[in-house]
Amino acid sequence: DLPDGWRARLELVARENLALIHRHPWMLEIVTFRPPMGPGVIAKYDLELRALEGIGLTDVEMDSVLTDVSELARDAAEDFRAQATAAGLGLEVRGSENLSTQTDPARVRQILSNLLSNAVKYTAQGSITVKAEARSDGTSPRGGDCIAIHVTDTGPGIPAEKQQSIFQEFTRLDPEAPHGAGVGLAISRRIARLLGGDLTVESAVGRGSTFT
Image (cartoon, rainbow, N blue to C red; front, side):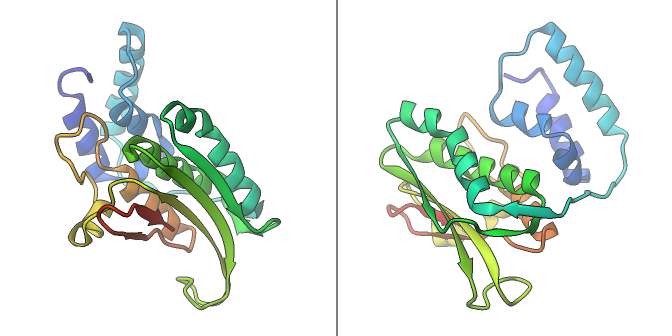
């Protein structure tokens, strides 16, 4: 577990400035995954957290480089193949090849990593599918053509009345769940919008979820 008072401190910092977690992903990691922390690690993070508690609002910088999104999606999925296999889940990557666009590959991968992590954690059986595709149906937030990446699972699904609230900070479907601080999807949607896109979900209870 986190040291006494850390969860409240992390949540306060993030609530004041969600962008800080973009720059300091260790905050999300220690809340979400709760790795074992010896005295040395605790001291290191405590110093960083004390510094962050005094920081005001800062801008989030985004790169823009030509990126093969289909390759990026495959690589992100491979990062979670071992975890999926250990959980007895199938992991499939589909989609067109050579889908390239100007974006920030590190940020896109951060979004995919969060979505894949959630899919592995909350899918008890079945499979996870990652699919990249080009779209020209006008559904892009900016209009015109876009590239969409879908992460689909066969998990429990999300009730319709909760499909928007899950993108709010510190919101979890199951507040009693042993893992997760409820900030991952909020961060991911914020990043997606800063990149000129969006993060949405289609889901039904008992039929899994697709995040795009």
